[in-house]
Image (cartoon, helix red, strand yellow):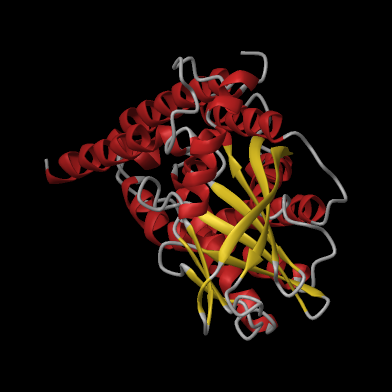
Length: 376
């Protein structure tokens, strides 16, 4: 009775995670800040969907922003963005003088784009930036910064726990700082990406199941060594595949529309879940992991791909981000696989919990496909 309750408690927990995370399965919320010439110039791009959380940009509530609505909300957008930025140096806070305003297109949609001259009281460049946009509405929001300093461009990330940036170059010139920053962001991106987590779960489930009904009914656990080898093959294939496309996309060698990438990622989850019950794509799970992992890599790359190319340290940032994704993935497996492996020896898990989980994952996958597909 204790084991049975444990199995259904685990299933309930997984179900609650599914439901609570459905709304956050898209590309993470990011804005883009480009600081040039000293820096004395700023361009900031903020997604229209994010501005809708802060302003009345969607005045008629139809979840579409027309050109007229955008023009009407321009002053409100400008005030909102400018109030979230504080540039300063030893003489005090600096002013933002607007130069241009318009729309830019990033991989995940349209952004409001504005250019400013940064003017400090003493005529010197700003020494620090404090960024406070959207953190109260979305703790997962990030400001991705490209800083031009001494003729070289460097990458860094601003978040709820790192809102201030030293613009003198001391925080951004070191490759180690870039590397550790993007390792952290890679971990966060993996852990908040419910679609990637569900795909990993579906890949892992076959490695927890007995291949013999007699073995399951007798309560014997599948051989741990064999299951670990199977799991290692699956994860290695998935890691290799998404690392390839993550690099290709982030380095602007291959570019795919993020809306279609997200749609195929959602579809891959449903197909992988279906394949556990009916192996229409074959029983070699590692092949499935590699094939769909290529698509998932483009999803991971959405965080880096919209920053300018040719940035000093981009390769370091890419390596750090990829390592962070792997560390997040490993953390999930270290916690989740032993639990699923333990449950795998129980018939209730195999014949009850697993089909329910697969059905639930398949339903969520179809919901995401409809939600994300550009034709809908």
